[in-house]
Length: 299
Image 1 (cartoon, one colour):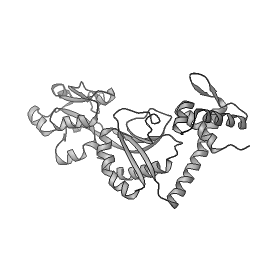
Image 2: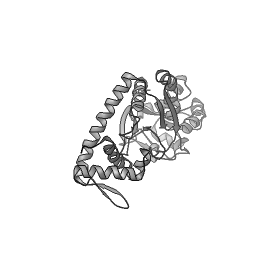
Image 3: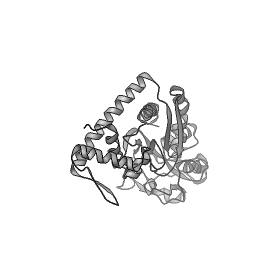
Image 4: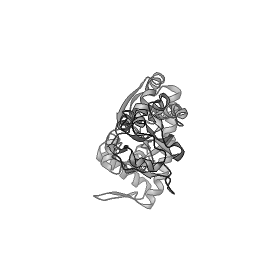
């Protein structure tokens, strides 16, 4: 008896989502249906792929080997389906996208008009969150994440990167003076982040170090809030180029300590579960986003 794609999809989704229950929700199936698919798969292969306990799922050695083959098979099928979709019909349906508020406002939103014109059958649903979300729990098809990735269960596609700069409004500098060296920051109002703390490590040379940990005078959870505080003349801020490009070109924000700034490129990735049934919609969205972002990665 031959293995079915349904069984392969059930197996890989259970591994990606961490449980049979989560996989059933993601695939819109019943828990018993997923369990039966796994049982049939193990029977056909004549081996145990996972050890299931009340607390967790653990791959056997055979399961680890078979998982690689299963992913390759499903990826090949998805690629073939996508190519046929593009050739014979335009991608359609709902696409749920999640991104941090600043990236959504400054990068995604300006591109929506052109994307909808090119792919009018895709129904975009845009969600903003400044915290990392669970894609399955939030029913999200693709998330756009800035910075280094930690979740290895997701498929990640690099889209580009942006420089970090220390900036201030001219009104603040007129009132408080311009810092000439990194040590001068101790006398200034510094706008930082509540979390993660790594965002309060500014890319500045200080002695033998290539980063400088600030003690924020004001903290915010959102990069857009930090930007607005800087524009309002409330202090110095370290922000990515994607949200300050127009501010810098108009002079609303100006860079300080440029000679002491270390070039740090903050990566942007799209993350999604490898075996999603919406791969055609995701693929065309990411292709479009990557193409539009290319000239903007330098700021």
